[in-house]
Length: 103
Image 1 (tube, rainbow, N blue to C red):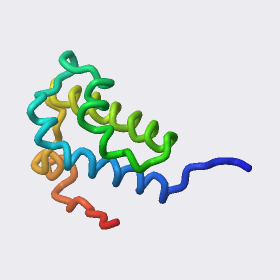
Image 2: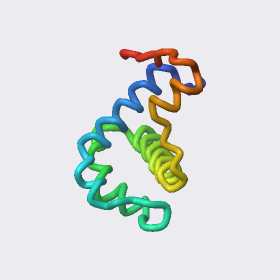
Image 3: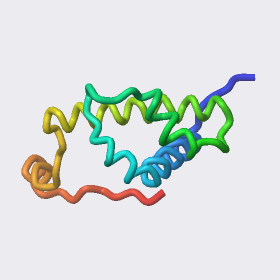
Image 4: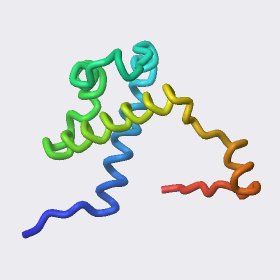
């Protein structure tokens, strides 16, 4: 029997990660993260791991890996001022409306 990841698995995982980030927002904001000032293992243990207690070990590891990459990416984007705003998008794409998806 082969194991595979379905679209629904990905949606559920991103929902779990999103909920953990939302619930940890105040604690994360206090850390003022950048590329050089945090240890993800400590961050995971102290703030975020509690949100994933009900997941099985493989799902916890997946959430941990995805979240680590998200935090790294956001730190890099902030450091390099890569945040893209609506004005930039409208200039580049001629005012096309961004699509919103409701899962």
